[in-house]
Image (tube, rainbow, N blue to C red; front, side, top):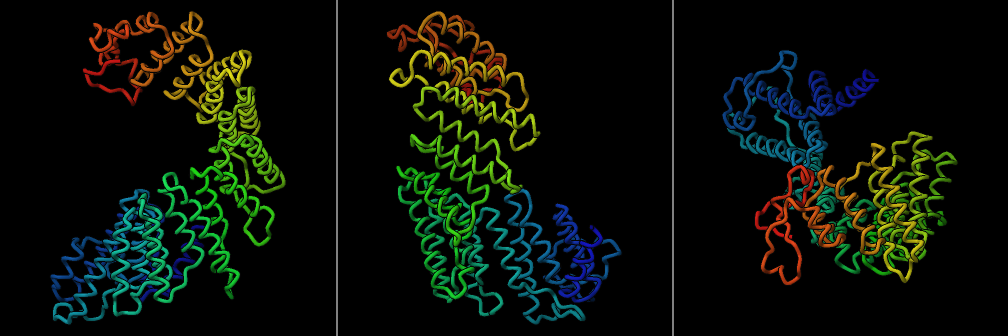
Length: 541
């Protein structure tokens, strides 16, 4: 397969390269980039260019400074003349780098190309080389550089480069639909609250230049609203309006496929409603989801769509949310059972269902959440599917369902006792297995369960002490846990637990009759994993 891949690459590069040697050289560059060795590929490229300059018989100091590497190249590539495909290959390699900032290095290679192009076009004697034409940046080069800036989190620089392309008097430098879409994507990838405004301005420029937006354009615009969804009430509705615009344009277009909303578009709008604070956000998201299920003219939902609509219901406080989520999960299970391998349910969906139960006022919600955990554990043990392995989020959702059974108006004493039993059974289970290790949030929920489900007195104090001993052992006694323990235990129990850190009563606290814990005196071993611990010696609780 590797041989066939290289042969295919060689065939492609043979059509785009000046010589067979350059085609082989480009295949090697691509191999390095695909293997994650982009730094090595760039060094090989610039070394090859440096050797070409030095062999040309002229010093060409200007070009030599641009390359800025010594000619120390394997003899195999000594006579190779890099072309624009060589540069584009390495630039594209940088855009796929694992580190975000490093992806911007594609722009650095473009700048080298631009500088070489300017010098070679000046007609200086030392820039006239016999037998070799230095590579000139093309449309692909600019679009790759834009993509690198987009993925590298530099939307302002991407827009500056787009502006350079717009004012160029060379037709091949002028931005295309891909260029504009990439620049909008740059803003969509940023976390700027002005991204949607910037994207709207770019679309207006496109239309003025006679370039019609397509599905990707509008889908990227929808993504630009993400940073403001939780703050601006009508942001999700604006995303939905973009979807309507696409559907309207598709009906009027001679080629609807270019502008019709796809599954990514629909899913993005559903995700927008999931993050929105609109009171009817979940129902609006569900309407779009149902449209995808029944309307033949709309794309069928994928697993990401199902996760989005489940998330929308889970974040709502609708009384029917658990029922709706259960129906959606059942649909996913049926699709997977009927042969849709890409529709395998995951623990994420079940954790959302448990969260929905936690938000409900159902007296049996703790038991229902626990039954979800048992089901997921059973499926994982039977199938070994990594996607169904119970995680800490599912455990915490069950614990949250238990600790929130506090209001006596909704939960009788029996429901609260059952919730407490479930909470500690779940915690015991967490301690036994290895795939969901208790953390500070686990103890937070357990202390809340003790405070909310047990009356003040000896029983609660005993539970709090037992929990505190485990919390000390695991090293999570930070600021937050200290305050939580103070709200759970009576004064004497609290003072006994923190006897090593209790100091003289502060004058400002005497009137409340409370002991003062000096946080800096808490043993380091108790707080070794507490990320919220404040090391100031003046901190008192």
